[in-house]
Image 1 (cartoon, one colour):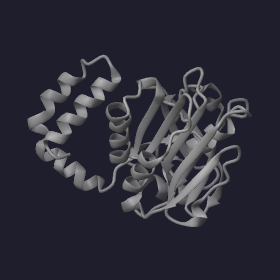
Image 2 (cartoon, rainbow, N blue to C red):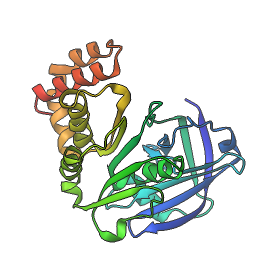
Image 3 (tube, rainbow, N blue to C red):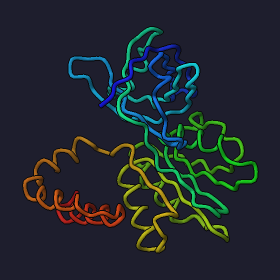
Image 4 (cartoon, one colour):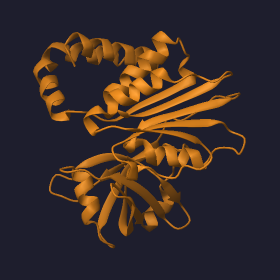
Amino acid sequence: MTAYNATVLRTVRITPRMLRVTLVGDELRDYEGSGLPDESCRVVFPGPDEPRRVYTIRRRDAAAGEIDIDFVLHDGGVAATWAVGAQPGDPVVLSGSPAGKYSPPPGTQWQLLAGDATALPAIGRIAEGLAPDARAHVICVVEHEEDRQPLPGVTVDWLPATPDAAGPALAAAVVAYEFPPGAGYLWVAGEMAAARDLRRHFRHTLNLSAAQYSTVGYWRHNAEEWEARYSAVAPAITTRLESAESIADDEEYFDAIDDIHAEVGL
């Protein structure tokens, strides 16, 4: 996997709990993007075990060799801890090729962009790139009023919720949203259980085609507890999970994985 070396150029607080880190480096000029506004990259942080996390690219300037990444700040996170302490000149590495899922089909008449605070970098970049006549509404769950960010060109429902309640709050708000008339496109990102449940709602309750929605899980509530439960049941489901890899259709694949996980209480 190709690695791209960079250093910290500057850091800026966007809100009390969102920190923007601008990376710079000659190698970033050759770091080709996907062209999608929700594209993410793998960040390799300094340390003995080189921890890796996936983050949205908030801004890209290939000519200047710059990339902005916004970090949601919280206690105990490897990435958040690094971001808070980042100083100009600190090294960091990006690896792999950026990828995204935002892809409204031709003829889309309205869009719903929904997520929690972790989705704001992608939502912000999507909003900035919308055509002047585009109709888009945002549903975003944030913990505090000061976590809100300006999102020009779209209407916004800001929903308050603690991190523990962010996923259920997001899922409930999207399910309750009254779709405008015409052809729509739904983009959802945030807590993994909420993204999973909404994908199944779009596909199996609303019978939408795969082209009409995109969902992605960025983080998992009680991740350590989930990992422990997964480790306990892994021997019983590994073969089935491996068999599911042969399913060519993405949505059928996700259905299969969800069903396997549900059977063992994941």
